[in-house]
Every structure is written in structure tokens, then in C-alpha cells.
Length: 255
Image 1 (cartoon, rainbow, N blue to C red):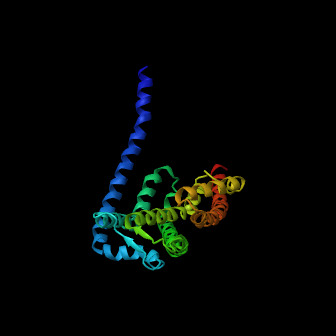
Image 2: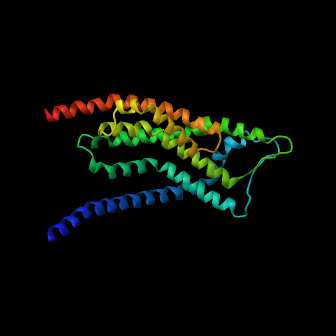
Image 3: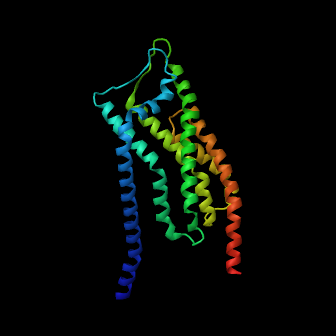
């Protein structure tokens, strides 16, 4: 009986250590975001003009982007600066994420930290740029075609920021697919054959995810689903190339 009790304590100990490590990483991320926020807040007008530019460019005549509530401008400014701070903190966030999962990796895999941080950051920025310069101009122009005749678009600043943030973050994280596929393939969790086999189910999942992350219209869903399908095919190629290398190395180790 005492032995069983001791083994139970030992089993709980690693979990507590992981939770403590996670807490430390989250605190570091929070501190970094706060520091960046304090810098970003001084340039809040610039960022407000930047995020509203795609919408303002296609607003019909007499349509406006409005403050519906008296406190809306102030809270939108705070939320915007928080979003921008998280955006600029992405390299540090990816670094802390890597440091958290690194203990579970092989020694040869831990050396990819720089590659992971750089590639993950660039892909996230690429996804955000695709949303801002690609999806938004076409999407906003399409949606505002309904503001005709007696219908005038008076859009809430707070709702627009929520929509903008959701889409930017969604596209940013969706573009991370090749990076995570690379590491999952290196660790042996997935293979290109597995991704080929479940391709049709993956496509279905992609459209479901796109429907969840975007507004309830076919246009927005397609704008997200099409890049995701392309990224999935790129990820299959990544898994095929880098997954094989891992298999060869493991065979060499156990030979």
C-alpha cells in the first residue's frame, strides 16, 4: 500500500512541474506584451488609421465608421494596442512556446529553435498580410455593395476591430500549418502517407474551420479555405521530405 501511494506522488510530480513551467512561460509572455503595449500606445493613432484603411478605402458615399457608445473610442484604442502588442510580440511568444516543448524533443531536434522562431514568425506575418492586402479589400467591397439606395453603412468601430482582429489572427495561425507539420513529421507523429490517406477528411475539416473562423458567408469562407488547402498540400510535401530524413536517422540509430 505505501508503495502505491509513493508511485502516485511520483506520477503527479511531472505534471506539476509542467504546469509550473507553463506558468513561468506565460508570465514572461505577459511581461513582454505589457512592455510592447506601453510603446505601441504612444502610436495608437497611427495603428488606428492603419487598421481602418482597408475599410475606409471602399466605404460608399455618406457611409461612416462610427462610435456608437461614448466610451467606445477609448476602449477600442486599448484593445487595438493590446492586439498590436501581441502581434509584435509573436517572435517572443514562439520562442517561449519552443522552450516549453523543447524538453520533449530529441537532442538533434532542439537545434531548430532559431529556424522555428523565424519561420513561424514570417508565416504568421504572411497570413496577416494576406488577410490585410488580399482578403479585406475584396471582402469589404463585396459586403458594402449592400449599402445602396436607402441603406447607409454606419459601422461600429468596436465591431470592426473585433472582426479585424479575428480575421488577422485566424489567417496568421492558419499559415503556420507547414511549420507545425514540419515538427510533427520530424517527431514521427504524422507522415505524408497519412496526410494523403486522410486528404478528403482534411479538406472537409478545413471548410468547417473556415466556417467557424469567418463570418457566415461563402465569400469569407472561401477566402480562408483556399489558402488552407494550398498550405495543406505544401505541408504534405514538407512531411514527405523531412519525415523521411527522420526515418532514415532512426534506422541508423537502431541498426
